[in-house]
Length: 394
Image (cartoon, rainbow, N blue to C red):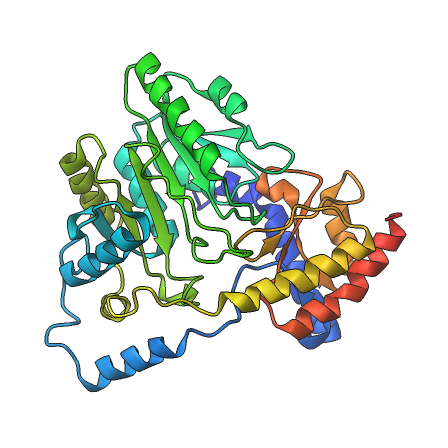
């Protein structure tokens, strides 16, 4: 076999994802793409806000000298300073440019963080349901992922976390608003999490790191305010991207924000910059860094996603589906009416509705719907969801 054993094992573990994707392609070829209702991918259909095009046009027409040259590993100083200033306004934490590392999206940022922090065998706690690729990211850097369940409302289960901590634990990774549930972890939970981790540091005799994956941070509904991690635990880092709040997923632009209160701050920042280069990401895209520096505080119209959420949740609730209403992001994670979530997702496929089984997120018995799609796709999917609900007794 030409490919590495580990890669082959990962591909086999993710084979259900590939199978779902291939089935979706077959259905689209058979019925026409407009007659298949794809709710499986978190690929937002919204366009970037007008300010993005204005800034991009201005840069193209009035280029900054040297704007396509190499840059410091951590990114352009002026971009990092702009982000730090915005973060300081939002959080009340005194960020400066040195606390920001520009990355190739949030996925690139997470890999940079894990490469910097992990020694072989170090454990990373992740909470189910989790983003599908966390396991792969951890193993990329010779770590060990340990899965801890959440409670019935998908909030962090801190008692379960306390039981999972061992002398090999190095990182606790959280994702809020969560993919796939849309849950935002409350301030009180983060405060309790911080105290738990401080006690664990004293008991274990070594530092722990709280890493917050935040690409959906600006997609919040119903007046929810985002609870920041920085005030709750000193050794904390946030990783985010502009894929969702500016609708720029294909531009692969994100950053790491390091809490200024982190222990060994200088060594950590140097390690992140080194890992950014040696992983081969080298730098976040140069042109987009210039653009983003002038778009701090700008977001898409989040109200459009809130409207889609309200429409979908109201319709599915009337059909009998059970779920936690999302507070953010653009996903819904209903319970499947049968225990076998993969079988239920296949039943939806037969009705030309594409979703993702909860097993892929470490939580069988649920399925994920991505509602970052055109209205006609949401509307068209309702009949198949309704037929499946009736077929399984909802």
